[in-house]
Length: 191
Image (tube, rainbow, N blue to C red):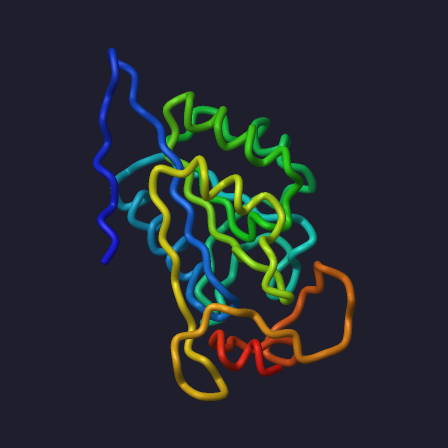
């Protein structure tokens, strides 16, 4: 179970931090992100939420989980744009962080250093099982990391790989169950 950090202050200034939620497709990353952001809203914190503009699978603007839970967000095409919109908020949420440029690491550090709680969700590995985008760097700078798992659709074991069912050599290929399935290590290696 994840214990949410308690706010603290340093020399009268609220201390910021970074939380990363990672795992394979269908593991509940976006669900967990939405849950944490909704809790921050209940606590009357000012929340700003972002997603990469290329992710239009369910909605052009809102973040939508595979279970159809959704929350308002602002699409961005470059990580630097987040700084323009984050303003005086308390909490920044970012979904599908692996799709943003490498500048996301500097942006996240600036936000946390300014006293904001930054919560990111993203795939830690691509469909080849390699580290994805800036996620390794984000995991390294995070104070809190939560790795969530799916269930292997082939054998029912714990899954943490996103297996691409269709031929496509591009690292970024948006898709759902028609293109991807969650599998365990054994099923991933066996193809």
